[in-house]
Length: 193
Image (cartoon, rainbow, N blue to C red):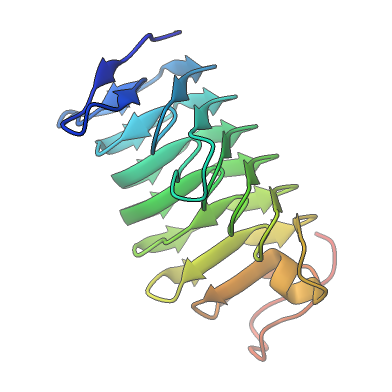
């Protein structure tokens, strides 16, 4: 679906799904552009089994979440080729359960090409081929997340450290596959699955 948006309380254009309180599932949310945060979803909950691609959130470092921003319970989605001016090309400021998503080829002009500011249970996700102009091509700025059984590979950022290109300033993952290093936890693997 291609949406033409509404205006938020600050008078800024928003598009896609804005402040939704019901479950959103089995949709294609594609090529939306928001003037500010959340190119496809903003302040929504229970987002399941959607294709979320090629959405855009703003053009400044203050505009976050190319695909999703400020959402709760995000599972089973394909989140691809979204972009934002700030942090979290694929998703930003997500809480609750974030599970079984494929987060691929998203771009952030700040930190966290795939995801940033995650505070929930980040389980069984594949984060692959995302890019950040800052740090954490895969994930950034998520010290409160519980990262379990996820794959972080082929993500890139301006950071010289291979492992920080995958994950930057976030919780230590467990039982995950991380290109470039295991974060000192022997439950993590580094070889290509």
